[in-house]
Every structure is written in C-alpha cells, then in structure tokens.
Length: 328
Image 1 (cartoon, rainbow, N blue to C red):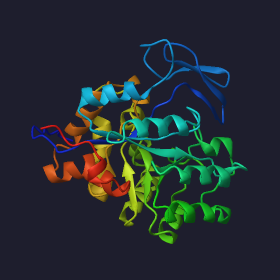
Image 2 (cartoon, rainbow, N blue to C red):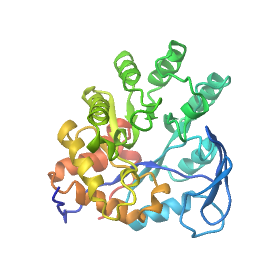
Image 3 (cartoon, one colour):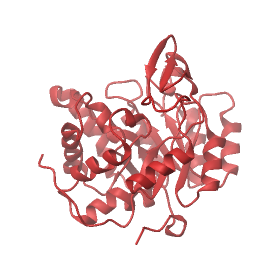
C-alpha cells in the first residue's frame, strides 16, 4: 500500500476508543490484575508491562488523556472500560461531567453477574453515559471470566431491549479471530432483531497476520466486517499497531489491513480509535494519529472526515452543540 499525505486541516478528530483509570484493579480469566509501579502490572501470577515507565503509579487520569489529546490535536474522546482495568463507571462519569465537550463515556457492565439488572438500572439513571461497553474477549474480557457466555442467549434479550430503548450505543470487543468471544452470528442476530440499537465493534474485528496465512481466518474476518452492511453497525479501528507488533512505526502492515477493510466495507462505517494508553507501548499519541492519517491518505478529504469524526457522531449519537469546536 502506498501511503498518502493529507495537509488539509480536518474539522474535527474524535478518538472513539480511549481509557482512563485511577489504578489497575480488575479481574480476567487469568486472575486478578493489580498495578505495581512504573508501568508494571500483575496478571494472576505473572507480571506484564502495560505502560511505559514514565510515572510511579500505574494510572491514566483525565488530565493525562486531555493533555495528550491537546498534544495530538484530538478534539474529543470516547472512554471505554473493561475487566482488565476494573470497573471505573464513577471515575469516567466524573470525567465527563467535568469535561463534557471533550469526553464521552460508555459504562462498564457484566451482564452475567447476578446484579446485572441493578447495575444497568443505575447506569441508565446517569444521563451522561453514551453507551454500554461489553469487553467479551477471552484473554482480557468477560468470556474469560464466564467461559460459557453467549451473546445470543435468550436470557440477555432484556438487556438489548433496555439499551435500545434508552438510545445508548452498545460497544462490543469480540476478541480475536477463532476465539470463543468472536461471536459474529450472535452479533448479527442482535443487530437485526434490535435494528434501532447502535452497535460499535471494536478493533476492526482484530485483523492479525493470520488473515494473510489462513483462508479460514481471512474469511472469518471478512464475515465480521460484513456486519457493517447493516444500518446500525460500525467498527472502530483501535489497537491495529498492537496486532502487527513488533513491526515499528509507521506500522505498514496495519495500514494494509486498514486498506483491506476499507476496500471491503467502505469508509462509511469506520471510526478512528487508538486504545490509548495501552498503545503507548507502541507509539506516542500524536504518532498513533499521524500514522492512521497517513494510512487513509488515499481517500478523499470527505471520506477521511467521515472516519475521523462524522461516523462517530452518528454511531454515538453525538450532538454538534456538545462537542468542542475545532480550532480556527
């Protein structure tokens, strides 16, 4: 893929996949997650690096994200959550209340917990939440905690109805190709049955080198991308550089997968996302945006603007009046 270059200034840039947390205190299939110091975290009995060793406390606070956004030229970010970091609903809610023009937030929910209905009832009372995020992946999400979890379980029908009726967006991380969480058929069923429910699938359905070497993996990836043909389904593009590691900046293979997806589904259902701060292990925040812009530089300015902001406004029902205006 030949990388283009765009010198024309875009109206707005929205990062649809960012995280904040006061500490790492979560639970995944491998065990408890606990932040240590200088970017290190215990995962069960293992120790992993999740951030560069820049500060003693393993945290990513609203001021840290907002300064990074200003540095990169990102106007707005959608805050997402998952079991790895631990539930941060009130932390995210406070951030949105303090910075409503720059931040939106989806709430954390585990629908397989016994308290799920009460948890959702509390979420729905908080008008600031724009969606519900289900981190379903086997390795760092709900399918690792609940191995038999199925999105098409009829016992979850109440949940999709509640989210749809509340006009919240459902964000799904369906994990890696071939994993138990990669539930394309179940997601299609939800999308078609609750056709007013906006659904965002994270990580562009996780393209990895397997899509080059395995016809089965490539077919499974394209089948999930085909959900974009439904009027209520979008895909964010977060974390693509992580899937081609250790390939260095500017991540040409990630750019090739991005172009493959655009060729297959078009730019109308694609949302820019970074997965910061986890992706800071691969590049700084401005580099994540710059490399992405280079990779979509072959598109018209109108199509680039769709991916970088306009599609996000539709998927997350964002009002222009509440978004921070672009700099002059």
